[in-house]
Image (cartoon, rainbow, N blue to C red; front, side):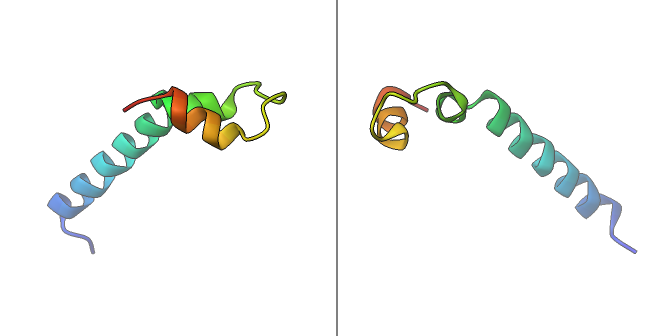
Length: 50
């Protein structure tokens, strides 16, 4: 079976990764409604920071 310490590290890492994708300004921009802009990815990269 998996070592309890390793299991705890994996769970915490997973939670941090999920929280990053939920709260990241870049991800929020990519989910936004920027249909009129030619390149949404470029727009989000230039207008968000972290």
